[in-house]
Length: 118
Image (cartoon, rainbow, N blue to C red; front, side, top):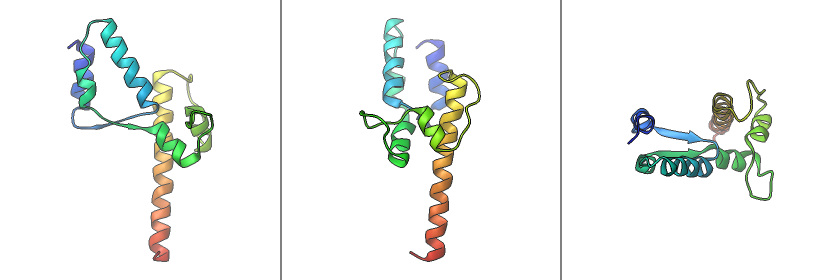
């Protein structure tokens, strides 16, 4: 395994990974590994959650594919972009912000449900 793959696999071992468009990103990682003759089997060991699927289910799909863009999900969450869209850092921060916004609202709903004893 190449150093980058080994480091990534080591950092994420046993931890869930949240990716905005998981199918796309995993496919690109596998293709990149294959292009460089690097193993990609470590990707199969990851527990991956797709934030795009979560956001589309929560905010609603905004395109014919039944998905939502990160920009639309961030806007729905009331987030303001910091940094350049489609850069690793900005997209990771926006993905975390979207997931945190959905989680916070879910917690509010659970608390309200408990208060109302529904």
